[in-house]
Image (tube, rainbow, N blue to C red; front, side, top):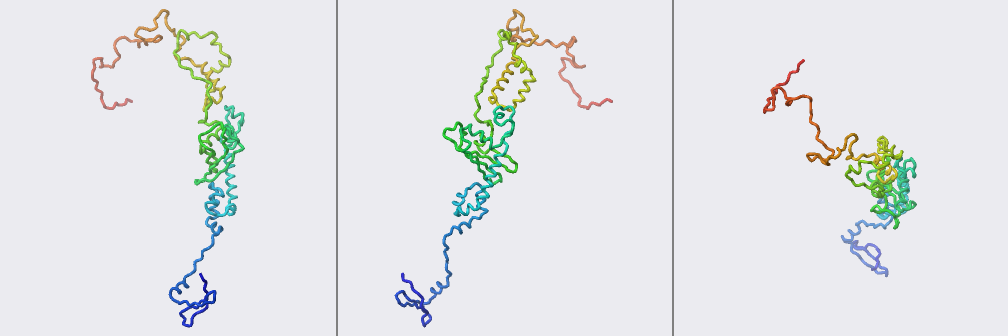
Length: 351
């Protein structure tokens, strides 16, 4: 295509004179199409510029996305804003997220457990924070506490979601049925924290209630019917209990032990379980034992009394009020009376 240049206007005023690159002369009629094309405004297409694209997302919006958990790379990929511009506003929000994660780790999740030997040996009588409890519980699952990384971000309701990320090795000794991380919901105003998944529940409790329960050392004893002939006479030396056992059989001591073990599961403290079982065994009286002071049976009597009553049972004696004769009935009423009329008039009260 050859480019033409404007030379001037023809003498008739109705044409334009144009010149070519080789010196040729051309004439162009001035008509309505030419006038419309000359009067139309030009459309400028701006070049693509990253700074203009970055103006679509304000600094406040960038910080809001990072505060909600997005990384600088995520915001740059979503908005098209340059990474340099994103990093300019990331610092203050990133520091806020780290601060909230540290505050959540300082929340107390367990207080002193005086009856728990494992707790006393680890923390004495001091309360335990979330961060300390998590670092204590991780080795139980074969996880290195040094691989732990904390983070947090703000939720829509104003609370903060706290995350503890760690590496779960292939030879881990325990599992909870889901992949890391552990998640909690932290209320900064109330200084409270709530478990958000199974890992959080397992790591923030010294011994989770629904965790694996250790095997019991005590086995249930099957019920047995009391045999009078074999069980009536205690074996020699049965009454000679050790002083410690005789002291434990005391009801006051038994009640004190039961109060101190309130809320404690079997299997947590095996020595205390054995002591309690021994107290209950020594102090219990079989329900079928004959009571002291009542003869079990006359010598030579049958094992069953007349009437089919079992051994050791008898009919109660007839009630005797010391009076002879018929029933004690009101005046005018006898055993032949079939109907009694009761007046509904209110009874006057005598003064």
